[in-house]
Image 1: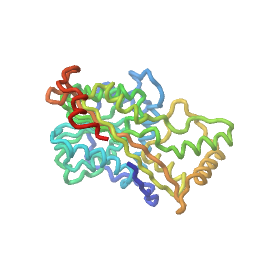
Image 2 (image 1 turned 180 degrees about the vertical axis):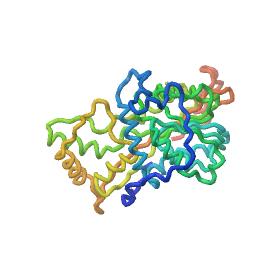
Image 3 (image 1 turned 120 degrees about the horizontal axis):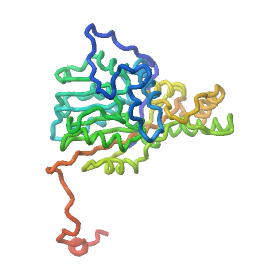
Image 4 (image 1 turned 90 degrees about the horizontal axis):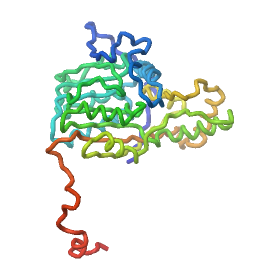
Length: 351
């Protein structure tokens, strides 16, 4: 499915509302104490063996995004709405829900009574992002939901085992160094028959920017360095769910084409979402002529007749359940009583 969105660049900056007079209430586990938040030690006690992304830099980028966040981001709104639509297909209720990083505000704003959630836990590595979520006024339909805020990392989930009915992650898990490990921890946090819902960016995301960056760097610098993060492919999503041990796994893909006035507007949007480069092996210097060449190549290769440029965002939606005796299960191999040959004889080949 391909959607096209015209991004409004007129509202490029949005400041947070006035802080409430009462002190915001935040939860934190012993492993993720905010006492050492400034120097980042709170997230360094048990580092992942796999190091692709700089998690400390990503936390700083999300701190910045808390100030740049755009309240009516059509792309983020569309992804969150699509993800939460899956709750309407479930007759089951989810009294306790955990929302991980990514588009926290969009998920809370669009819940609108879905899943009959009574307790909502919002978790992020960014303290500023959680303060923003705390200060924003909830919609009338979400006023009766008990909401708590946890400063924590998806790679080391500070949630008790079998304690939540629903785990939601909207555009956040693709920045983890160990995605299978993070998904396994999500499964452990779920109660039996609990639901895991996630939306991550796929490998076709920002393909136009990748091409423009590669060509510009080859022309100006005679070589290339990674400017866009590696992302999971669609074929990997089902394997990730199965490896994490989820039952009844489901994967589907949407492709959104967002149009911008220029490449600089695209970069501003990525900063507002906290989606800029956080690779450990990244180059810390971007030459001015390389940046200008990237923007010019992007415009010359992909601009439309109206002068806008497209940016493709591939979103992979993943659904999985924690095991429960009431769930459907495949029959034991060899237990069939009718062969396909008999079915073919009875109904014909269909040609």
